[in-house]
Amino acid sequence: MAGRVAIVEVAQISGGDSKDNYYDQAYLVTKEVLAKAGVTKDEVGAVVSSASDIFHGGISCASAYYNEAVVAFLKNSSRQDGESLFALVYGVMRILSGHYDTVLVAGLCKGSENPPNDTCTGMFGDPFYLRPIGMNETVAASYQMRLYMERYGITEEQCAKVAVKNLHNALRNPYAHRKGRYTVDDILNSGRIIDPLTTLQIAPKSEGFVAMLLASEEKAAKLTGKPVWFKGYGSSLDTFHFGDRDLLQGQLKNAAAKAYRMAGLTDPRREIDLAEISEPYAFQELMWYEDLGFCGEGEGGNLIDSGVTRTDGELPVNPSGGVLANNPYVSRGLQRAVEAFLQIRGEAGERQVAKKVKTALVHGTHGFAGQCHAVAILGSQE
Image (cartoon, rainbow, N blue to C red; front, side):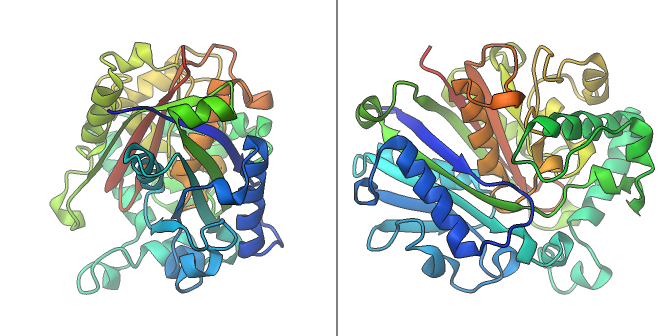
């Protein structure tokens, strides 16, 4: 990879419902990240945004609406819809092209004004076979969870432990939407939505406006003494039709392998200090452990039982609370990158893990049962 790209600064808002309008929220995170970096809007070379217009944004021609708020007016800009980590790599590529030395990347999602997530995700399926039977993301996840438990002997209690861990971690995160001290029984008795999924094992519908400023190596040296470097990336998309897929053999392994190869990682369990994983459903965090190489196939339940992924464990996962605590559907992957940035810089406040974080993994997912995955590796200069 010719040259290096750094994340210079980040900004985000709370995931709880806000009376501020979409335009103002986009403006506020943009203003904050530029002020932190000491950069004016005229110094921003290009803008890449991650937003959904009709489904998760509630407005048409989304980028035309918020362009001015994210300083994209009369600049090179593009909008990405789907998994927001794509926006991060698009911004990186803008800089690697040599045409820009700064790029603003923004993730925009006003959950409080959106329809329920599954009203939107019900439109993901084809209109002839899947939509008429009520297929949506949560229905797909329920099939995946049942198959996962039956094939590998994973228990409902082990799945619930993910929600216990992440929602407790969120108590230390002022930006989290859902948080609390729960027991495994609390999680399992929180009301069946679609068997075997219960309410607290399903991510909420949250606000989510985040921004980050990327810079070339030369420009970053002028803007910060603590750059966080983009080190690797991979993404992979499974086949469209739900019935054509093995729900336990998805594309995350492929996405992770590409990211590890680019970052020069050969033993992710030992070389990664912290992971921020998108887990829209609690059991998926266990599956993603396996696909990311943190443990063997079918061993995700044993890994969480061991305490390895606690904030004080060998490999902390989701010290922010993850997507179960804060789920701005469109921008949730990019928010994981914001959280990893803060951990690497030692600026995560009460949710800062005790160990030194030099290398962090960031993950985002989109579509039925993890149809699309993206993985990014971030690291310090050391």
